[in-house]
Image (cartoon, rainbow, N blue to C red; front, side, top):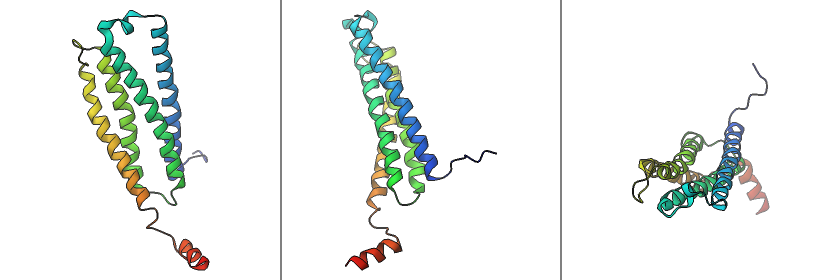
Length: 163
């Protein structure tokens, strides 16, 4: 058994740091690929009858990149919390991971096959991902809202001493 096993709060922080940096690499690479197709005037991407594809793939790149950065911010947020928050670990963390896959994935699949200007059936992943993102963000905000309310006995002593 390895002695380097990470548990508890550092484990979830490392998970979101890894997820954030690797997905950032993935979605920035997608953006470079899209710019390359634009630069070389690839018809599959740039023709006027492929406007839906171009929009959906641009949205996939943009949302994926933004959600990658949200993972990094979430990891930083977890680090500043004074104790482990089981609700964030059980609810917000998996919801954020799910949203980071479903939202860009829905946009990308919606542009892969489309019907007369309407995105393909893959776009149905988007509302599910958006709901998961809403849950993750609201749970994180609620946890931070309780941060000042739950103070440790040591912080109460320091506050009394400074008063």
